[in-house]
Amino acid sequence: MAIRVAIVTPDRILYETEKADLVVLPGKVGGFGVLKRHTPLLSALKKGRITIRENGAGREFEISGGFVEVLPDKVTVLAES
Figure 1 (tube, rainbow, N blue to C red):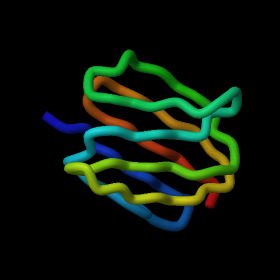
Figure 2: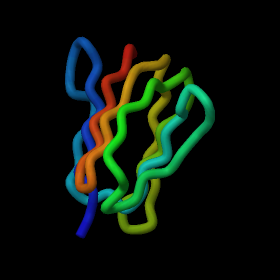
Figure 3: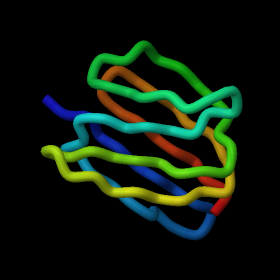
């Protein structure tokens, strides 16, 4: 089973997948990774890189900050840009 991931900006949905194995995020107090069945949390994000791993391949996105909602099977990033 995989994690659903959505990265959303005020203008559009930047990226969506239902096949992520790992999401690494730039938290305000330090980077952190999210795997399937992660404990729910809300966190502020600082400027930095989001890395999404799907079947061993990685995709990276630069954000200028924002917030993330983590659920056991879904990660939603609300990015400023």
